[in-house]
Image (cartoon, rainbow, N blue to C red; front, side, top):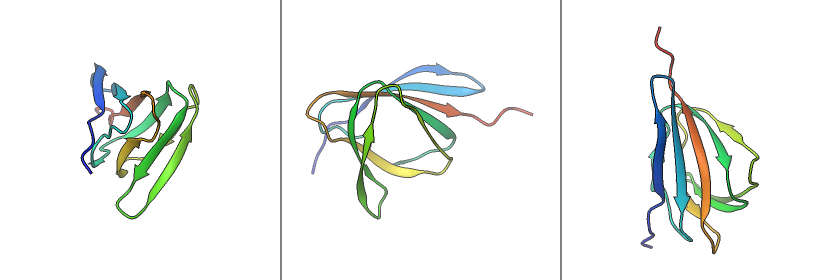
Length: 98
């Protein structure tokens, strides 16, 4: 199935963090990717995302303003399962320079 791509807007990229706003049209996806850093997601919209980790598909119910954390190395594709735009902000924590 061919899906449209979610649109990333990098708002901050410095030696400590990368902050990206992700906008998903209905059915849009991030495409398969692996996270290089620990990260926090801050949903700006309440709704449902479909997560494909290569082994199974599962739904995540997200609530606007209710953040969650994931560790480095997570591999997945994220798909908007809503019939409206879904938006979240992703904050990736780069390894501090020693």
